Each structure stands twice: as structure tokens, then as C-alpha cells.
Image 1 (cartoon, one colour):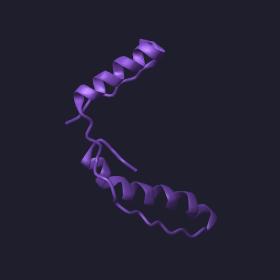
Image 2 (tube, rainbow, N blue to C red):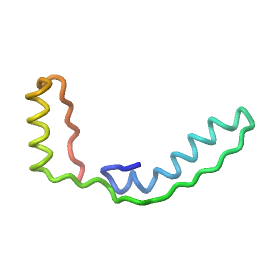
Image 3 (cartoon, rainbow, N blue to C red):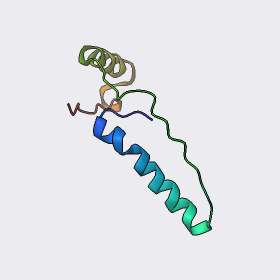
Image 4 (cartoon, helix red, strand yellow):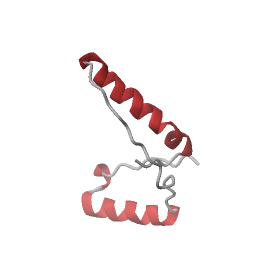
Length: 72
């Protein structure tokens, strides 16, 4: 899994563990998670992101393109 924010990436293993445990617990199921960090957080170049945004708006219409703000 990747995230645009280092803080979120750091919490992902715990969140996954909590979700899996909450699903397995009522059924008495066992689980094993092998979470391996392999890629850094997402760092998109602003100028390329804008180019993709404009192309998507042209292709699918402005109202169908959702852009999430950067939180740097």
C-alpha cells in the first residue's frame, strides 16, 4: 500500500492489524500478516499532476474529475 503522507504510511500496519483482528475475532479465526515496506510515500510532481488533471477534465468533463489537495 502507498500513501501520500509519511504519517499515514507509518500507521498502515497497525490499521491493517486492527481491521483483520476485528474481522477474525468473532469467528475465532487465526490470521498472520506479513506486512513488508517496499516503496516510499507518493511524491507527485505538481506540474505533472496538473497536466494529468487537465487531460482528465478534457476527456471526462470537469465535474467527473476529483482532485485531492496536497498536504505537504
